[in-house]
Length: 331
Image 1 (cartoon, rainbow, N blue to C red):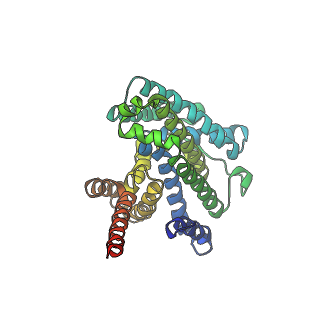
Image 2 (spheres, rainbow, N blue to C red; image 1 turned 120 degrees about the vertical axis):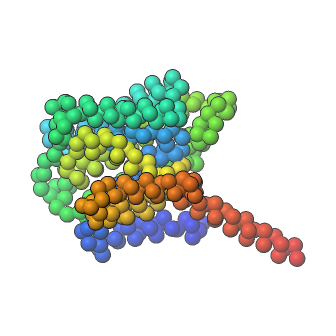
């Protein structure tokens, strides 16, 4: 039976489907960014939120997906629809290798975070110095005109629906795993790795699985990023700024929650884009200052994130109503 709470996602999806009929091109662009960052944060949340392994270098996986599909497209004419899966597979392979080396030798917490930052910078350096992948100039996606089979559209409508579908699938995957064995194992590792190991959880395999899935999903977003912006560079996809942006939305929305990353992106991206558009000329990096300020406030006053706070409030209200009903029945 559908409850009002269960119907909220369906209502939001219906509104998002109808949005292009009333939105301007600029507003559609803002919502494309919201959906893109919501998806990337959802992908990061599997590793950082559920499994508790805070990667600060997820731009590595975004970049592998973006560069792979773009190179296949401009060099061999392979459609990004196919290139995104190849990029996802390469990213998953890289994630397995990175995860195995890190977790096999006990890297966790700040040490794992520092390693991921270093890896992201290493990829920036490598891609900047390899001419065959564009070097420091990066790569421009060849425009061949309106061609859905090549993930290219004259307007923003096609891109909007593509990223909406990708986000819906990302949330559905997270929701499905959230109440299944992998989700429980990730949370167990996050809460107490030693206790999880004692209960029979293979913590090494569990963390690697979370890393691989998170990387694969992030790489899919990398292909869309490249096709939508039609340009990728070493620092724009591998750099620390994009990696930090991805995790900020998940932290602010609520780590380890299905809807937290999407809520964080929905609240922050429009404000940040307006700040970038109106203040970038006078205050460089205004959107980054905004991200930092909001993140500090959330960590101080709402450590569980917005969704976590809402869940706590709803739980308290439910208990209060239950007590009132019990009291009435007793009378």
